[in-house]
Image (cartoon, rainbow, N blue to C red; front, side, top):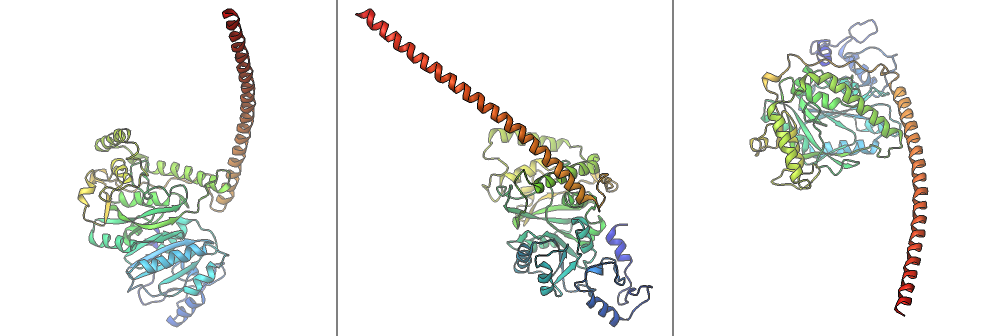
Length: 448
């Protein structure tokens, strides 16, 4: 039984309050509302009365979202300005009735006060008060969702060009679609030259970095896998939706601007921590989906043809070439040729639609059941993971500094050798000039 289904089954019947007292006694609706109001903004410290459902000690109880169609979940920590821009863009760029759930992991920059000031029926803060990891924080907010559609965003995202409305319309129009990826364009960082974000995984699945999907599909696949914790949750969810028999598509227009907060300096702990998380995500992902990675003949032929084309036209077909032809760029061609589950004629099939790059897993390739999550690394106990990552980062930094020291030493020796060679060259040049002068004098004497 998946997490979301279990929480729903624990719910009391509609119109009846759940247990609220410490001994589990029922309370009246008035008492329940008073308890809910008292819980607003209170951090779960283990000393409060129990309420239903289990994740609601961080947030007030509310009536079902009868009018809203879309729920948006956002996690944040000490990014007040970016969070404000994200929420403002959602409100300005979305016409569908919605509810925004924001989980704060213990911010100290004014984020808590900001969320309390804008809290209402459409913006519902969840004050976790501690870092739970992205997967767990999102899953606890997913359990609060009561709308037919749900979307996850990051606090450094800004919605543009009616992106959420476009994805929502695609899901309404095509009942085979389980999830629509929001095309993301980096506005800063190492990938801002790319036309949009979204890599092809090791098993040929085009990853959805930010997406909008049906709530029942999300609950059927169990939400985000908490084994991946902070890194790799998006590729895993994309694969789970696809291998559950649902199609996955991408909006044609850029729907989200991403103001990446990654460090590009290789001598910083943040850079090496991200590199460590990336390597571990790849190991977990490959361990989980290795049995589904065998490429088909058509996929192999497409990849081979793409490689030959790139050799013939390296600049025009460079993956980050922003030039578009009929609205399609070089990255689109890369994804069509390298993503295993995108049809070869996807451009033609979805020419008039507001989405494309539709991934479809044929029934014969669908697994009987989704692969189980891989076991976590031995040093990934939740309480010790950050400490472990810090120690690992320090070891990586020590190795980097040692390597840089050796490189500097070699560079110094190389510079000394170059200086010696320059001096030798100067001497030989001087000797050659002296020999030329002597030769000229001898020739002159012979003529005389």
